[in-house]
Image 1 (cartoon, rainbow over the protein chains, first blue to last red):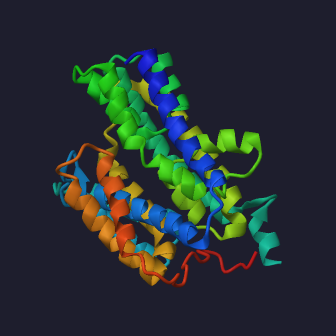
Image 2: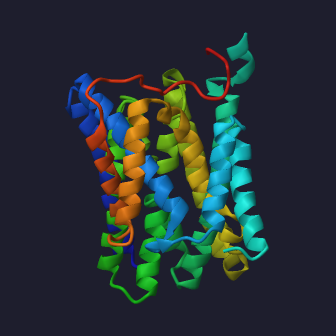
Length: 102
Length: 238
């Protein structure tokens, strides 16, 4: 890792972030586009949840992780406080791994 | 009465507690990043500089891993930027939340992070901005503090997967997403998005499958259904 690489990654990443924000300024959003941006963020976040819960390096992540996410998701659906959701998810996965389920 | 009891200054106590939980989890991941960077021979100042300036965990892990595996720095930067491409549409989505002043934009842009975006979207509109800044600031502090601890502790840092931290993040995002998924069209978009991202994962480099999830927008209905971004948690009208 070099400073050049770090600075290039940092600058590129920052420009992506800022670019999105400035783009929002540029366009006066008709309501339909506004709704698309909102649903687009939902689509991206669902995509993140699905891939982070189920996959690792392009393959299946094993059973322990999705089981924890499922428990956390059910807890959230039952309106369990957010902090507990996070702890339940991590605890389930950690427990399963502890007993040998990967 | 209700809002008076539940807020400290401009901050909502529930928001603070939830953001602290996220920050604690991100700190654990930051520790493992610091440990990985130390093991890969990344100098202390460079690794800290990376966490402060890049502040996008996935791309940092990826870049360090690429270089550690003998890849060229250019390849590491390209892989990291591919993974971060999603931050552009996320920036677009929070563009009306960050604030209008120059400082608000310059600093607000740096905290466009998956969890921060999800966190502010899960709050009612009048609290979205303070929730955005609060979670962004705490995550930034947690991530960088974790990096420093990890660099110092090195091999003594245990694998965070042993504590199930890898399940905590998708679960947290899912919990933050649930209110948005109440709308029928959001649910339809979400299902297609998940299927597309999963189907693309074996074939595309990291970062792109999540962008493929945007294909879920193809099933958006014509009429704006109920927007389903309602209040979570407290029953306070605030």
